[in-house]
Structure formats: C-alpha cells, structure tokens
Length: 551
Image (cartoon, rainbow, N blue to C red; front, side):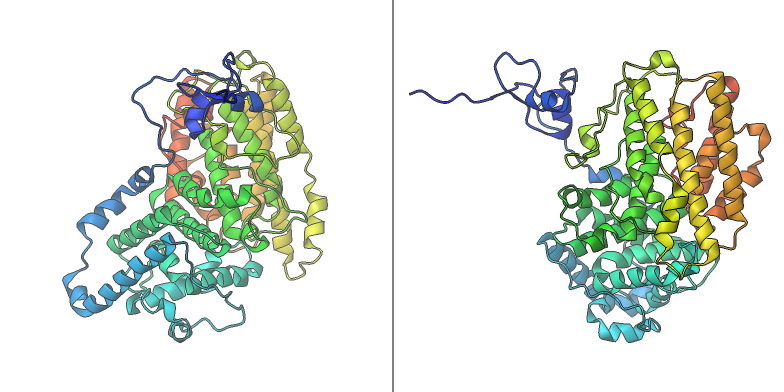
C-alpha cells in the first residue's frame, strides 16, 4: 500500500539542533541543510566529535551547586545544629523540616500559596503581630530569626541599602514583605542567608547568623530555586525574588558565579515571557528587571548570550534600581550576540524590528568549549557583514534621547526628589555611553578609535563622580559602567585604594566580594596590557580571576 512521504530524520543531528535538543529534520533525501537551519538562515554543520550516543542534558543543577563549595561543605558536614540549640528547639526543627518537605511537595504538584499583596499602610513591626495574621509563616521563622527578618523588612535597615532614593523605599519594603508573608516556604532561607551576610558585614547582632548558619541557609535556598516548579505568575514572582536574594548574597560573600544564579531564575520565566503569558504585575516586577540586568552584565563580560531578549513596555516605566535604563536592554542583548559571534569568529544574525519570534539565547549559542583565536579587534578578523552589524548597533545606541524621555516618565512622579531626578538622567547616560564604549572596544582597532575610547571612558568617570557627590543613600547601580571605563585607564593613573574605595562606595558597602573580585581582574588585565598594549580585556575573562559585576 502506498504511504505518504515522511520527512527523514538525520542519522546524526547537526551541531545546532544537537545543542538545543531539537529534532533535526530534512525536507528531502537530497537536502544538505536541515529544515530548522534553512528557516533561520544558519550554517548547518555536523563537526562535533561523537563521544557516546544520547543527547546532552541542557541543564545541570550540580554545576550551580558547586559554585557554593563552602555552602555544600557546611550543608553536609554541619547539618545538625549545635547541641545546645538542638536541646531547646528539637521539636520546632522537626516541624519546620516537615513543613519544608510538604512545601516542596506542593510545589512539585504546581500548587502555590494564596498570595495577598501586603498593603503599604499596614504596620510591619513587631513581626510577631503579623505572624498571628499569617499562620503559614509560624513554622518558617524561629524566635531567633525574627529579628533578622525584621531587619530585612525595615525601611531604615536593609531596604535603604538597595534603593538609591528614599522615594522608592516603601515600594521595596512592600514587595519584600508580600513575598515573605505569601510564600515563606520559598523565600525564608534566602532572606536569612542574605540578611545574615549583610548583618555580619555591618557588625550587627540580630540573632543567630554566623557564617556556618548563613551558608547553610543559602545552600537550602539555592536547592529550592533549582527544584522549583512554577505554574502561576505568583510563583514566578517568588522565584525571581529568591533568585535576586541569592544574587545579593553572592555579590556580598562569594564574588563570582552570578550568571549561573540569574539563569537558574530566568529559565523559569522564559517559557512564560516568550509566549507573552505574563501579567503586567509580574512582567514589571523590579526583581525581574534587576535579574535581567545582572545576567546581561555577566553575558557582556563573558561574551555569552542572555536567556531572552527583553521587550520594552509601552509606555515605559521608572524602575527603583535602574531608573529609565531598561530601554537599553534590547540593544545590550544584540551587543552580546555580536560579541559572542566575534569570540567564535562567526557572523551574527541581524535582528529585525519584529521580535515576536525570538527564541532563547540557546538558539544562538554554540559550543563554548572551543574559543576563537581572535587576538584583538582588528578589521582583518571581521567576516563579511560584521562591520555593517557593528555600525548598525552603534547607531541603535545613539538613537536614545534620555533627556526627553526622562521628563515624560517623571510627569506623574511628583514624589521624587530633585536629586533622584538628576541621578536617573546621569545613570541612563552612563549606561548609554558604556554600551557605546563596548562597541568601540569590539570594533576595528585604530589610533582614532583608541582616542575615542579614552574620551568616552573619561566622560563616564566624570559622570560617576557627579553621582558620588549627590545626596543619595544606597547602591547607585552604576558599578558596571565604572568597571568598563576603568579598562581604558592606565595602571599608573590610579591607586588601589581609590579604585576599590569607589567601588565599595558605589554599592553602599553591600557588594564587597564583587568589588574585590572586579579589582583583582583589573589588576590582571593591566598587567597583561603592560606586556601587550593591544590586549582586549574581553579576551582575558576566561583565563583571568573570576569575578561578577556588583550592583
């Protein structure tokens, strides 16, 4: 009996389909290019070495767990608490452990706690009064941990270090309190780990938050994030809150591997975001935007591709962390794609104006185990179309007119102070100039481009100094721009105390580990450039000291 023709499957998938675990199909027996590569205009090749049959796993949680080696050691060796605490809290610990296991079981089934937004005018303290109204947190926090949670939710405590102006403190307090009161089984360990690290750095005594306990709580929070299964927008909001909490701990204590944590959180968001299923509340959640910026900064440094391309909402909004700088996220994504393609000597795909068909960054990524041999941004290393793409991206960066957009955003924000208004304009200008500087570093290397990069870096540092002199208390969220500008400075022009001191000041002292790791990489880069003036700092990230961009 005659049967209709079926597309043949390749006996061995091409490298791109194999990378993202897609089925590799061919329209005809004579086709040399698979259907997916033909549709996306990709080079269809099968050059990888066949080690053993089977598809690669796309996500390996153990790699992220290994980023907290100290945490794993404390989690396994010191899992029992001290004898004195066991005698007093044995029954409470059993109840807390049982409730945690039940919570993870509920999450696996797709269930989430009923989430009621925490009203901004409700009294927060003492926390024991709120526990009576929210019974689901009785087993999540012990008596010794209550003071630490109160510190995290206090506008004059933890909150003031993470917003650059007082006008944004009530909103951040509301989000932190809402997530804690609605999903304590998810965020409590992350709050305790993050708050314990910050309290230790400030010399505060707020219950039991020694290094062992802090690392143990953070390890449990990381495992919760990796095991999390979400089926509602409220679940995504809790996952983003937990991810940003772990990023904050990492920047304060570890100093690197922020990219792994950000991707672990954003992988939960990607299916919802790409299918446009997110509600306005979740999509505009500041935790989402801050996590996106963290991943984008890390991808720019490591020449990788973010999880997905951000869609700027219309009308745009003001964020408590990055002001109006969110409009640059799509351009920064395109720069990551361009830089990644140069790293592997590959021509990037030009993006069209309609981004509705975008897939995740994995569709554009290749095998990261074999780097290119590009020694510097010379024009001879460019392939056909690279110069055109570079000029297109540079024009896209120059299109932003921050002054006009800034006034539009603040017409209905009369509560903001004059210093906050000026700060947002300076912050947005710095990120725009930083994107331009990175493009010139990736572009053809000439004497004119070197002078231009130097001028852009000096202008960024001038704006950063203006921000430092403003009456703002909290993180400035400008450290990435400062770091990129310092790569154009000479080692003899700066001192260790000035560079490190300014980094710590820009983060309000809560991202010291990241500041130290960034300073170590700058020293490594300056030393390498002293031997070869054509050295590009992006080419040294994989071989130099590990670092993560602070807040």
